[in-house]
Image 1 (cartoon, helix red, strand yellow):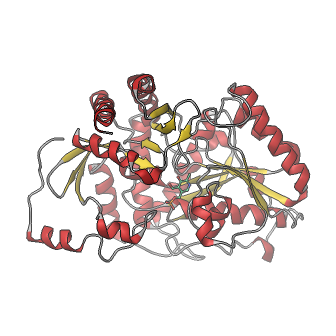
Image 2: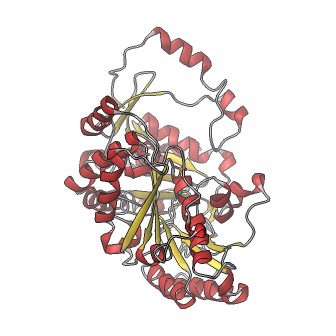
Length: 462
Ligand SMILES: Cc1ncc(COP(=O)(O)O)c(C=O)c1O
């Protein structure tokens, strides 16, 4: 933690008094926020953020695994303000468009050419991008003359945002139980999670066990009822679950056997986080549909994008028919400021080879953290790919039983890490590290050092 550049103002008092009193914050109980108001972050610069008390931290969360190019980048700010000087918003619904979305759609097509992508539909968030993917995959099957194909398969522990479609394919009961009834015809299979599964510790055997489960589920439900399979190339919010290397190629094979579409939810993994430009590309697999958000604009302005490949788009190329109208889209579709921010962000991602840096810094991070399970009573496993790293906290190292997040051990470690000048995110029983992809060696080492000190302090004070 270093000293401040934040100068206290009279506004600070208002902020402190009103913080947590009026706003509902996601993923917590409103009364918890009232009693423990959130930290007010007032500034960001590169990999660092400063809070209202003037304390500066390494941003080990990267905003919310989205500020991939780092905070306060002049290039992104300049692109947004230059666009604002022209026009901030105009509709993309039939008949009009603004220049940045034309540029961005061409750029995304160029970047996803290896995946044979053909068209993109913009939105405002990752949840929108998922919703769009689910709806377009149903429409695809209607256009193909197989209207019964409406079902979706996904992985347990998967996270696909919070709209009703995304919630229905979500693999964690926590996100679903308060909001049912959800979409019928959504099935979750075990995720290929080497650390916790009833099948095998051998990654390849495990991948086969899950593939067999998917194959049997498809046969049981009838392939003619399944529209698509949706998954994250590396599961993020569910606890940083990296599948065995053979899983995605085998998944593609089994889906091809039944003609089922593969949706790659790249909201976190897209644009470099796993060390490859796209998570699915890192596994050598071409999906039919890809969902982007977060890193596409590095969080400077919200933007989502859903990309469909040649195979899917071919259904629309048969001719103009009322059933082919895309009766889906958002006021924010093609937002001029979001697209301007994305154009500047993706230029940085390519010019600075952020996927390459994420791969290198991710390895350095894992190297620095890998010994922790040997001495920590709390950390069962350190796992990750690129700059998506998780520390799995366990109540019992032998049984690998996860901690009860309600007991606050994750928060305790995160607080100790903050005292050492680094913000990390406890999410359920996993501490997630997802810093900007511009992270330097020095900043990587600072995260390692802070976590080791925090976990040693935990051993002393638990
Ligand atoms: C894999 C994945 N999909 C979808 C979403 C939803 O994105 P948003 O929060 O922008 O709606 C998230 C958010 O973390 C995500 O991790």
